[in-house]
Image (cartoon, rainbow, N blue to C red; front, side):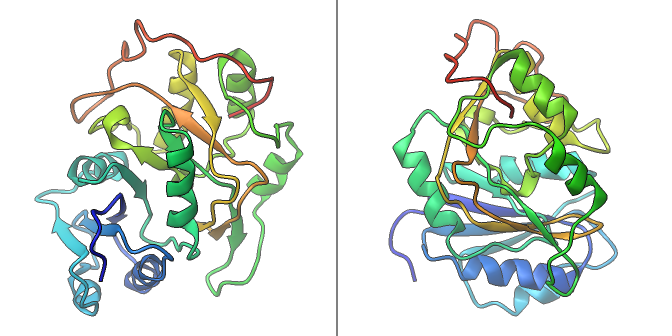
Length: 266
């Protein structure tokens, strides 16, 4: 059992799917580092998570059941609010991580202390774990984007991101002291992660290089996803927010815009 202070929280915004949840928890427990916490936030769905969590005798795992249903982005914000470590990854209830994810993301965060969010690429697998592809992934693969280390900032990067959202939400590791307790727009039913990253660029934020190899496996409702490392994946910088609902529109006011390291996309 770890003796060092936890550095990263894996926060699972759970609603249903106990079998997938079990796999997600197991993937966290297989991480190559031990200084993590796992927080499962049950949003009062039809399949309570308590039976699954009770199977694991691990003091690093905590289950919280919301008093009422908060919805998709609302529960994501609750996950961030309840986390106590410097970094938090929102690991969806049907996601899995490869063992090196935390080790490589945390190493990247140490190399670049100003980085706010690290992210990796993703590859689909089906419900049985076999590789697969969706039409959305085929289309996104045809869109231009940079593959090298880069700072994501400005209109060029924003345009590329709007053309196709290739940042998979469960791959993002957020720095809590920068994003604040409510980084996502709780009024949105869909794509709050896309709104989060595009807003960062529109309001003057930027994305900078992160880990060279960060592995994870993420999932969507339609197809489960393996998160593969890019050759040089990216990361996101943003400013502090407050509150639980819609994020402040002026959070980038007065913040200097990061310098550009080349043209590209978020």
